[in-house]
Every structure is written in structure tokens, then in C-alpha cells.
Image (cartoon, rainbow, N blue to C red; front, side, top):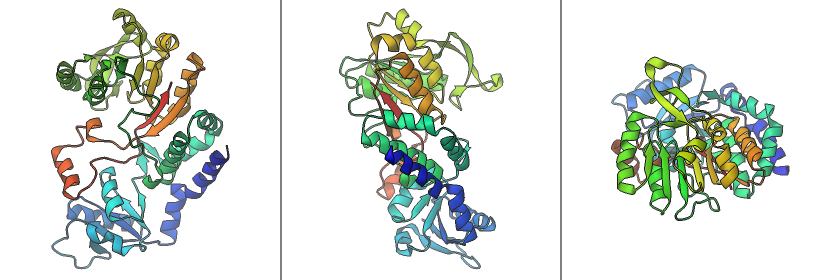
Length: 380
């Protein structure tokens, strides 16, 4: 309880809009770190300065052919640490640059773009303050200190807009000590995407049933399924059986029929019955905000078998309490943990192209993407 109260105090003190207002009002020096082409990076600095930010330095990997008449200094990335402590903050325009900032601009307060998953930092702050009772109950239900640190880091990071506040797990995504399926476990993978998680569990001896509604990604995953001995289905899961429009680009159910494909939706409860599965031991969900809907269609399975759950809890801010509350309503004896993960190539193969991986490796950086996403609620 004491640490939750302290979190509220920190949220007030580090609220990004208040910090940004202070940076602008007091003309506090800020650096922009960019790995974009130099002309675009210079243009970004000019735009920030026009908006009132006192951008005094640009940290970049290359220099323009003409540096005349610029109102800021250009420093090579490798020299960024030598400029500290003025400026105090380093601004980055994409999450790709987080690792570069952590390596070359150690000591700076790293600031990411202020709109994340369509929400401004102020909207996150207002949601936090409006649901203190719900969030306190979630916080007090977490079974270990690592989970509580993760909880505090998630909210403080998003509200302060400083990724340095976020606490990342040192295990692969969906893996948390004490919440791992054993060999021969029956695993349900909802939202298989490119099959990376399904392969991981199949290679540990689990019997995996994966679900990927997108036609293109299903084709990719099916090839992996044949090689790695797991089942993949080309339909979605939900609270009832129906047909829905699936937008492959957004990876979500859509109301725009012209941009979507018709896909069948089944309940996990009906699928378990159809396949005559003897039990379900582990359920992973990463379905772009449809986690609660799928849980409703899996209530009988969860009540009967009490599988370990690994639920993505970051697509909607209310997922933090609605997912936990629903699971508790089915089985009050569940215990909960929380972990946040930096994105790895096996979790986002479409982003980590060969060019991106080569760029990271060129400067000896860990090939990962720290961000405010990938927060997973575990239950056992």
C-alpha cells in the first residue's frame, strides 16, 4: 500500500505534460537523437524549435554537407555522452532509437513520442487517477515484488513518457518463473501471428494449438507448424460463434468490410469439445484488445481445468483490472503476476528486417525494442 501511494505521488510529480511545460517555459536545453537520414533529422530539429523546444543538439550518425546557419550543434552519436549534463533530456522520434539512446546517451532522461497506442500521456494520467481503487486492488493482488515493480514502471513510464522508468523481464516473452507449462502440457496460443511463440512452446515438448485469423500470417505459421509439430487454425476465437471482419493490417476485428476479410469466430470452449482435448494447461493471448471477449468464450475451460494464463494487458488501459476481475469471477483461487518485455525479433519478425538487425549489430546493440507495450498478466 505504501508503494502504491508513493506511485501516485510520482505520477503527479513526473506527469509528462507538466514536465514538458517546464521544459518549454524555462527553455531547458534538449537534444534530439535520430538515426534517420540527416536531412530529415535536421528538419525535425527545426520543427521542434519552431514549437518552442530549446533543442540545442542533434545526436546523429552522419553530418550534413552544409552545417552553416544552424541554431543548434550536431554531434556524432559516439560523442553524445560527452555533452551531458547539458542538455538534460534526449528526445527520440521513434521507439527504434531507444537502444541507441541507452547506449550513446547514458545519463540523459530519454523521452519517447507522447502518443502511444493512440493515447496521449494526459489520457493515460486521467485514466490512472479515475481508477485508483481498481488499480490498487490489482496492485495488491500481485504475488511478488517484481510484479509490483513492473506495475509501477508501466504506469509511471507511460505517464512520465520516460522509458527508463519501465522494468523489463529478462526472460523471453510469455515466460515467467512459476507460470511456465510443463512438458506434454496442452497449450492454447490465441493470436499466433508468425508462429514464434507456438514454436517456442512446441520445442519444449508441449502440444500446441495455435489460432491465427490473418490469411497471410496463417500461411507463414502453417509452414512452421508442419516443421515443429503443432496445430494452427485459420479462424479467430471469441465469446460466441459468428462471422466477423478481420483487418489483417490492424490485426483486429474491424467494422470496415472493404478493408477486411470475413473470418469465422468460435469459442475456445466449443473448440476444446470438438477436438476432445483431455485438458488445457496453458493459454496465451495477444489479440489486440480482444482478450476479454475470448476469455468469456473460455470460461468453462478455465473453470474446469484452471490453466495457467498469459494475457496481454496493454492494448486497452482497463485491461489491467477487467482481465483480472473476470478471471477472479471464474476462479477466485487464481494467483497473479505481471511482467513487461522488450520486443525481440522472434516476437515481431516483420519489424526486425535484415536491414534493422544489421543496423543494431553494426554498433553492437542488443537486437530488441524497449517500449511501453508487451505487458503480460499471468495467472495460475
